[in-house]
Image 1 (cartoon, rainbow, N blue to C red):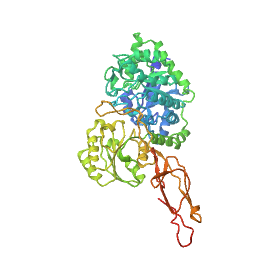
Image 2: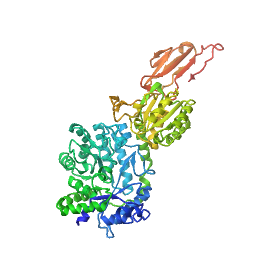
Image 3: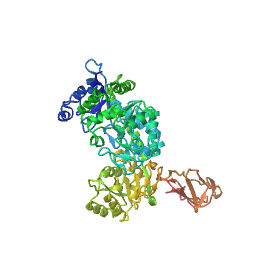
Image 4: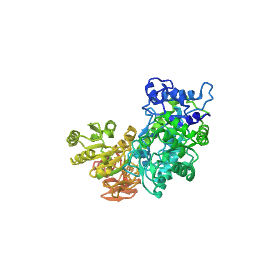
Length: 632
């Protein structure tokens, strides 16, 4: 391979267009690469990989995506078919970051998954993502996120994380990787951990100042992923003072080689995070970034905003002896070996007949709904506000960023009489708040969608004004899970961990009592002032265990001495006669018997018969007639 071919193999970037020869976005390709079509970008640089985005026209629908993938692969392979196939990559984490939408399966996201604490569901999520991407010709998913979201003010990770417990994130992360890598390569990100930052690396360069002991906790999921055989690790554009106080992980030899390779034993492919993010692009030139990333130990230069400059920088560094071709050979060999081991050489093209069979199939959609059901996390339920009584009148409002307009029709489908009032934006206006307060007076309950309300005074004020009406207020926290700390008077609070319909699936069913909420917090919730823990990791309320009372059986025989009633044994149920518990069994009784079933602590009834009454006959004609079995 020539020097430029080696640099090209290490260069993975996005292209503009929906097919290999699409010229509809030629202006964008020209501005960035000096050519017109996606195929020409691949040819110009001998790219090792491409990266799909919705905004670059790559992800209109599954069949189109598969066609684009096949067209780009044929370009890379050349007329004789003896070229090097592409890594075709995407950020399809599920939830907040998902470049492909319906009809592909929409998943509730990682923090929703974390709230289930279920490795089997994590494996299923990985299988769904991997199988659907592979059907569309994509062979790398830049997932899963293994960051521990230990900082409630984190602006970039949040619900993209599975939680803050290293053991839980490790277990769920490994299972996601195992599921994904049945079909595509997975990339653990963002090494060495982006979960405790207060700056978004898309817009600035974050620094974490914790000690090595704390860092070790953030490294645990990555070590678990390495031990499980993850194909790739993606770097974080953050400075970790405990390892290198001067350079971000992406450009740090101490982080990528000293820590990741030497100390943690990773032998797979290292990729940078996108190099057009401000944490990189605002600090160094693209020539400098490309050279320093390779010197640090990265194998892939991902999404440079100036590929020509990256090439020029690496060429100059090789000429000056700052990077040896032997060093480039190490990275190229890792990439090519990965392409062989992952089957990219063997089967570079998508089978177009598989797209409709695999992508968004009924089993995948059912699993996404199951994750949502299991994720709904009930954090407060004063005076058993939830579940709402069937047929209740509900006012559906909320911050526009919480997408209440998705929830309203779903609540109506559950049989509630829903009044809807919506406003765009994250901060409810005074006029909107006043309308909602007036409407709250005439309904049984208010449902309010919050969205990162810990930093939004208008949302906090609106909920306070609604609770002051005396109408029960149910808050659905749709983004980061910490909102309960600023809603002390809300009657009920339940977390959905996202604003997609699939997130609301479980939340709405819990509000209606169709499911018993079982989600648990995957993070600690601090007090509003940040001093102490309001709710601990693992906390979550439920409605109890559903119990079904068996019917009391009355046997009316001639003569009072033969009359009996039988009380069944039923888990979670007590039967009361004159206020006293009656054990299971058969009893003799004359005249009238009235028995009531009550749920034991931790159990609940759902539309069950709970009382029975019967008046036995005397057996003398004309004197008594039975009242029958009256059940309520």
